Length: 322
Ligand code: F6P
Image 1: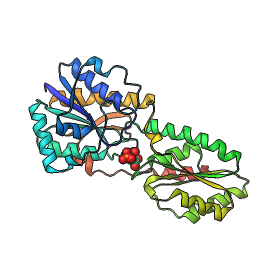
Image 2 (image 1 turned 90 degrees about the vertical axis):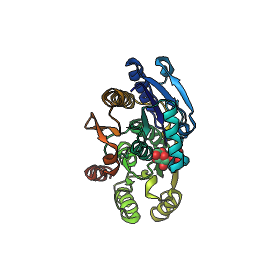
Image 3 (image 1 turned 60 degrees about the vertical axis):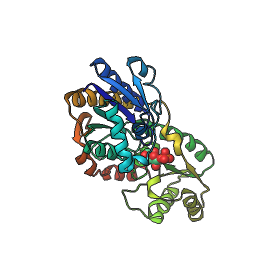
Image 4 (image 1 turned 180 degrees about the vertical axis):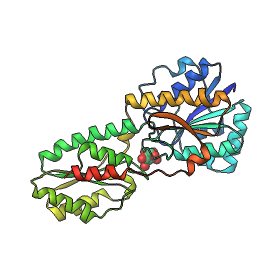
């Protein structure tokens, strides 16, 4: 391949810049021209490209967000939009596209691949909800951000003998809530993958710990369970007598400087996408991690895989946080 493009799409994630850097540097070092696509598929449709060279990705490895900007393109979801993107790729001599994003972005990459533009997906989403992958870029940074924020909330929760119900991100998945919940010692954790009953799994657990003299409580709720945390706080206060506050962490969770793990994984994945796949003329793949190793999957198969949450880990959390 002589020319490739790289884009970031969907919700941004810390470490995306490190992945872009690795893609660009690996390609440039191997004589491949790289175009950076601005605002994901939107830029691919409209030919919004910047020429990338070795120095164009200097000083971004430590920065959150994405230097290429991101977007969720509705136009690209239409056949017309996709055909426009294909025409733009052909006009610019683009022979392969690296797509850094979540499963929505991968569906776009799959559709492009199906229509003759070889794509390679790199998993970048704080949610860690890509089935073929143990780990997605941005997840570790996000977990650490949640932990830091909840540690702060904990100080005030403890000082006032209160309960705080913290809502964390995770549109369809509870990986963030479960692991952050363990890290902050939450009394209850509500995630979409495990059925729950507010009375039994929140209120009765709190009452049990009250008997053992516990006076302040943290409840972690994944956004994906669809519980209104303000309403839940009122319900908890009425049932337990513990003054309760709701705290929605929101988009603060998506920003910030990426952790070592996110920078290293992003670098390895970006390098792999170019060196092990596109440079060998292999497209239509998703780069993934399995038990710390970098592997790749067919993009069609990857999107049909299912990921399950570690139920034993949930049990450990329930036994320990009491
Ligand atoms: O997919 C990542 C994610 O951060 C989800 O956890 C969250 O539900 C969603 O994106 C928020 O998206 P938006 O940027 O559209 O608010």
